[in-house]
Length: 192
Image (spheres, helix red, strand yellow):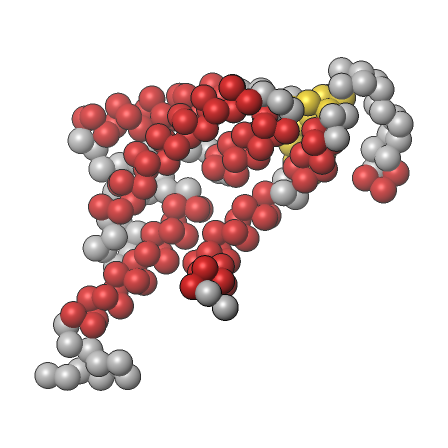
């Protein structure tokens, strides 16, 4: 297998993907676009047009993709713009601290962007994606500055689960690099 396949199997990637995959079981809100019959396998009764329902995210995305529902999770765009504004202001002030995001923020934004695309909200999704990418860049810069530490430093108390996983994975690589540069041979013993 090629190098890409090995990356797909890395512990770090598996850990990060497991966070994303777990979010597919989390509840999300969708709005019925038209009356829908009962879906017993999903535990849904008949729905009226415009009715909001809480379903596992994977089911919500399937309903949106089928055109049977539209995203109803309001506020993700507002929350995204606020988070970007706070992070940008902190970066301009020189603060090494990450601003606080609510638990599951990345997972909710990612699934909301997917739902927006599936619902045909292309331009709104592109604008939100641009803000999301900027926010991630601002936060990743702070995480990257902390990689020389051996544990999550005090400057990252507000790191999300995903950012902590990234920090721990990248730190392991940095620690191994240091060991090699300090003269540790391939079997783990010192050469000097």
